[in-house]
Length: 314
Image (cartoon, rainbow, N blue to C red; front, side, top):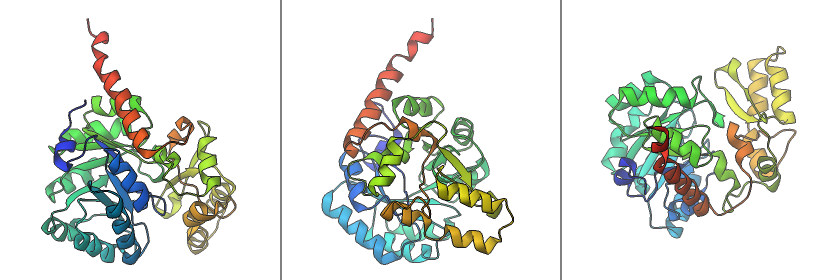
């Protein structure tokens, strides 16, 4: 079995995180991943604290193993959700889209491990100084909000500037990606898009079907003009948004188009007005299966690959 400081830090069997995908990663999916030996993470997104508290309690009712909450710091509910995470004493908080330092003292006082998502070396250095427990280095191959650097470039540079365990994310779907992340210096991985195919993932059937039928060039990035680029499937909505983005639409019009778009995709499967977030590895997702099987299979494949890398050295 792969030995990792991440497993020792969090008390999990496999160094596999399930990404915090807004309106997708609920208590049921998180519990299934945690039961399977990874770290299941409930996504707060723009949801209020009451929703997050409900999902935490659902997860705790299904597993006694560690769970996490992902807090999107641009959310107007971020402060409320930060308090809920502390009150419910989840084991881990991951963060994205901002600097979580103002909440970290409260979280640490509640015994929570804080693991920010970083997309640059500068942010990795800052989060290390602020007392993070580990870092998620997420490349632009991922679905949802993306940075400029790819995983191949970002992970080793983050590993070079911190003594904290680094979790590689973005473009990882199977054991080959896991093994590559470990070779780059990571001590764990985060998978998002791969878990869209999990049996416990409650996305609309049309969303899951799009993932299972995806091709290598199925995603695109929109939102750069407003400073918040997002990778999603190349649907009618995404093409219409890109046309508006570069066709002179006002910032207000673009924000109106995006508001509620992910939720419409997740809950209604609406291709015309829904944003189907997905990473570049969508084409590598071939079947629906239990979350626990996904965790086990990617790690077994990674262990086999890492175990035979010596064949390349004479």
